[in-house]
Length: 159
Image (tube, rainbow, N blue to C red):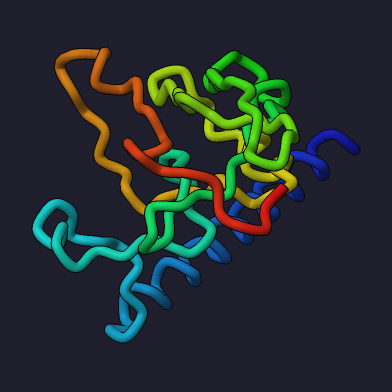
């Protein structure tokens, strides 16, 4: 007898949960001001992703073609699957100090899991996420990107 009562209680709870879900659906359906669905790809030109969206990793440069990456390698170490590779070299400055500069900051987009460990672990805030989300290509070699621009150098004051 007890199992029959539990059976009907489960049916009533299931119907209540269904009605609760339908109430949320109907609220969005009948209120025209709350647009949830984007009309992609029709709105491709004016589509803005959310602020917390994780697109591909980029290295922001300023107007003088300077970046904040010192080549410390923390992002490379923290990446769980080897998406990032930093090729750096050491130079001697005019005052006799040795300084590491990056030759290439290689990012393999096809291997990236978008876990954000590289961006969060960078002590100089040299990496960020872009708003770009269209990455379909026929050649996987196009998914390997060099993040530092040609001729770019380290910002003054970042050491």
